[in-house]
Amino acid sequence: MTDHFDALETRDPDARERTMLERLPKQIAHARTHAPAFARLLADVDPASVTSRAALARVPVTRKSDLSDLQKAARPFGGLAATGWGGGRAGVRRVFASPGPIYEPEGAAPDYWRLARALHAAGFRAGDLVHNTFAYHFTPAGSMLETGAHALGCTVFPAGTGQTEQQVQAMADLKPDGYVGTPSFLRIILEKADEAGVSLASVTKALVSGEAFPSSLREALAARGIAAYQAYATADVGCIAYETPARDGLVVDEGVLVEIVRPGTGDPVPQGEVGEVVVTALANTDYPLIRFGTGDLSAFLSGVSPCGRTNVRIRGWMGRADQTTKVKGMFVHPSQVAEIARRHPEIVKARLVVDNPDAQDRMTLHVEVASNASSRTEAIVASIRDVTKLRGEVSFHAPGALPNDGKVIDDCRKIG
Image 1 (cartoon, rainbow, N blue to C red):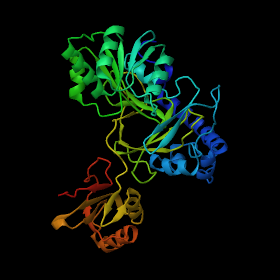
Image 2 (image 1 turned 135 degrees about the vertical axis):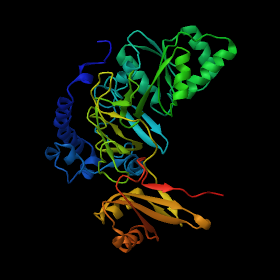
Image 3 (image 1 turned 60 degrees about the vertical axis):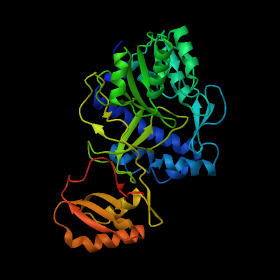
Image 4 (image 1 turned 90 degrees about the vertical axis):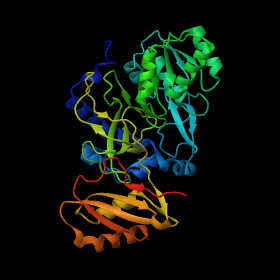
């Protein structure tokens, strides 16, 4: 099979959904049994009852922003890991650290982070030499791509970060088939090679991640003969979605179940609406994260990819979901906006706008309602004050009038 990594990518969508929902109760039961934190967090959840997306939506969300506190209370992984130390067939083979610090385990399973599929979609094949410029020190990115490349049958040059001149020299000498790393560093390497009069024509493919990948840079790379694709992955759950030759959104990985929820809640948003990416890891029994809130914004795309892969697609990274801000010395959280909306069933959607006319902070809750609900103004204003302990105003809008950008709190204050 040349176009697709395996038959899972092209299976009937309904069959995929049934398979995932069959695995879901088992993974929840596994997490409750073997991961102490999930035994506590999911104490009120009957795994056998979670057999639909609607039932999953009632399971608590554990957010990335929670990990630091969880891990301070229970080192090293906050009680969320279902395995211990050991480099054999079971156990943690490596430990990495992300800013926070947040510690992440790497298990012994081949392609533990599931990046081989994304590499394949980007054109990498067995026998390729991969120049890997992701960091190998502290953070897991280097190992994430290396293990994926090895699973695909590639050889890896562990270049790591920095040392641009040495990167150019190694690429000129070894003539790798492809590059993995951030897109901006690939541009820097190519420009340095141009300055030195060195040809890096062997590089014809790239899988990039870790930062925005603007179309202008993608086109500039294509003009050099390099086809570059994006992968969306985190140190916690591995690959979430990846770009394909269709260039039409990112296809969700086969090892995860993805939801898009309203920031600050666990409530799924309507199809196409921007919200927080929440991931349940179905393929990882070492670190079985259940409803893990990534803190990233995205949205589902309708239909299937023209490349033939039938899994759902997302639009890619669209910003951060944690829009907590400080108003008059008080923190205001997206979950508080959601609580205000819950108190008033007539509210379809809510967006708190913070500005500072005349250098004075002001909060206005913009709400979509099905009909004129101005008679409810005083009640909603009272809820704003009760929940946030701050004064606020309310502005009414028709359904669909508020921007579809995932923002629950929009801080428009001008500084200086």
